[in-house]
Length: 149
Image 1 (cartoon, rainbow, N blue to C red):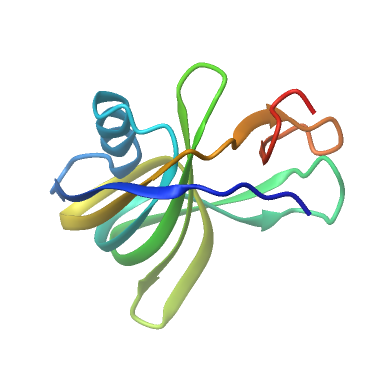
Image 2 (spheres, rainbow, N blue to C red):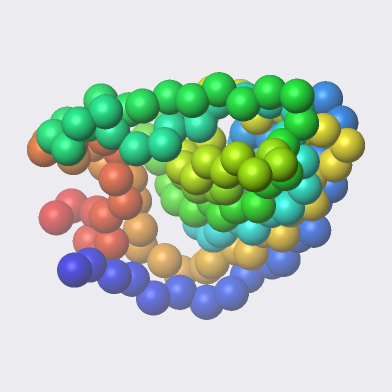
């Protein structure tokens, strides 16, 4: 287990409108506001996009299983915000649902907003979290504490 401690910083309420991409819009907002660490919670609806619903097989490194959703899905989710090698890294997990069908996983590549997505962003100050490539998984994972370890 690893951990770091921080304090709450700024709080933002953000509205993302119909046709905007949730992932791109939040990345730009985080960069413009110079948020290096925090988290975002969001609710609303998406026209369509892509979601990773787990690995194809239980092996490391994982081979992601992508699913596409389109024609309007409800969404609620969470994103961690951590410093990446070149810019803030946002890692999104969400549930999308339409009628009786539901998918949960990692939003990737595209998430086009339908009507509106409301986002609450809470900044964390003083955290020592950093993102580094993990040798076993091949993924950019958060590391807490001394970034040199």
